[in-house]
Length: 217
Length: 258
Ligand SMILES: Nc1ncnc2c1ncn2[C@@H]1O[C@H](COP(=O)(O)OP(=O)(O)O)[C@@H](O)[C@H]1O
Ligand SMILES: [Mg+2]
Image 1 (cartoon, each protein chain N blue to C red):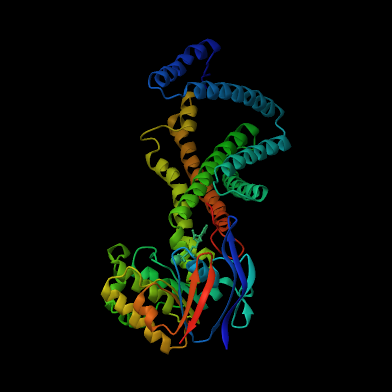
Image 2 (image 1 turned 180 degrees about the vertical axis):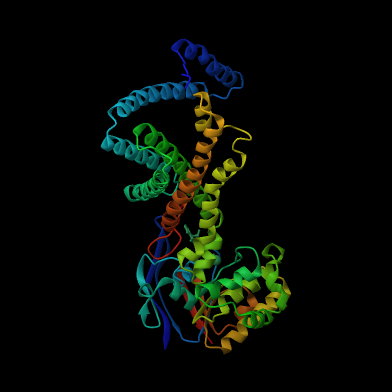
């Protein structure tokens, strides 16, 4: 069953058409990999899916309902976008992991947070670290937990392993592999040759936001 | 009360003070000479007109005219605060929001002073105090707008991250909003700390000039310090809580250009 459908989606900013007329269907619990040259519109596509931008025309259907018919915060909690080179906000790791609880009006659950930190090989006391003291790889791992601590229906990963040290990369790739076992639909953008080798469903995009070919194996 | 007299001859002599500024500007190539001339001519004309208008209103001592004058002050202050908002787009609606902030902050503060019995309901007291309250609220609101704008620019990515995690725009903007309101109130708080130690504020100096016992004059100054804290905090809060929304579109997405 399709959890996400893009119908004739186009996106234009400042008279520049970034996505022309895109159709795409993603089945529930799929693991879709998108690749293509830099600047071809991959991040823009994910942001449209995450409702961080609105298509100029066409529609995006999530779980049988138009994206625009959901309350925006609730939609984004279910279709969660992890940025390419994410920025942590406020002061500490705690501030970052607190937000998902806060927006759901729930109390901070220390045990749950500790579990998730463990999942990305970070110690429990990491929670009080200042964000300015984190390495790029650690930052990326904390960012991922922010998206995952309340598991979304769809997780959008925008080159999350790009530029990471090899250990962080391994940890993140392990996590993604584990997620495919769960009931999460994954859409990742990547250039990584290993990730592309193991990917089952690949979409190749080319300049101008056009789907060049779709490979399933 | 001793009468303070500044006659035209002493004003003309005091013009030398302006020449000092002009000479410095010319020598240091600040290119301010034109601006200085323009500003003093404006000041002289504005003050002369307002002097006669106030004289007329004070003599007439009419309640409606006084209210009208106070409203005019607030309308004018709102216009100036509005113009300091770099993110003002939907012109009339944005102006109305600024007006609301100035109107409430000014008249709530004024109302409380009147209730406290420290002001007589005469135009010569109500109008200058309204000007002082609205003027300070105007500065605070302007500061709040600018602080919001620079933070929305500097922290754009952090806000995007929060939105992406499903935060409503208010949750995503709250730290910025608080910081902006703080920035707007800071000058008033700093001023309250040094008042009397560094400068004797205008009102107090004026009273002392006019021969009022300094111990009585400080009571007025204390009143004004309270008043300014009230008006700047109210103004900044009302303005800030409306203004942050305009950084987002109807889909709760951060607007493209700031
Ligand atoms: N907000 C924007 N305003 C103008 N141009 C943009 C904006 N976002 C992206 N673009 C342009 O759209 C194209 C696609 O960008 P992006 O989706 O980031 O590509 P990718 O992720 O594939 O590298 C680029 O040419 C980029 O310059
Ligand atoms: Mg990208």
